[in-house]
Image (cartoon, rainbow, N blue to C red):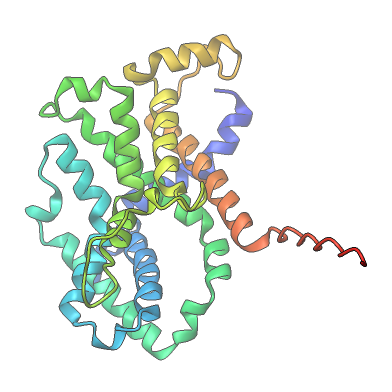
Length: 285
């Protein structure tokens, strides 16, 4: 790894390490910053959709909390079930305490300052780096399940399954929320967002997760992606002697998400709309 590459990856790696190793408070709230910020980010997204729904005033607390938790954990649950492993939510109460506490606190805050949810442009722009880091943790966390000896070796050796896990870890919760309309009083099955034909930006969480999974598995030199790495090295896209730690590979994945999410933010909020074509003038008779 060159010195320039190290300078670029080091701050990203430090941020990822902070999210996965530092607690909010050792006594008052002894939960890692990573899942806590993830809980907060999903809470804002869930509340934005829930408050837009005409039935928000009739939304029971049980439905409100359960819908939020499914949106938070849809990716984790899907990834574990695909690998045939029990998710932490089945044997630990701590994820519930962490996520519900954050959601209730932010619900109370938004009730006092409802204008928070009207700042989508500012929030999506300012939190873009954090979104990329959190999504990287989700994707690489899903891929780390492949190291469990209980996972079928055919799955661990499959490049396709790496991509599927990446998509599930990245977008499982969002797809579940949109498909089941989890922010409404009456959940109902609908068409998944990736099948609605709304374009690449609307499905970025899905295909972007698959892409980042492929990037991570390639630069971390996973055997499943060895042919991809060899091909890239032969074409000069990566150094043949590339050696990255797992944290370094995560940093590359995070920068990939920064590029993807940055493109979506620019496309959503900053790109000038295409000029309308003037209707052709009618000829006089």
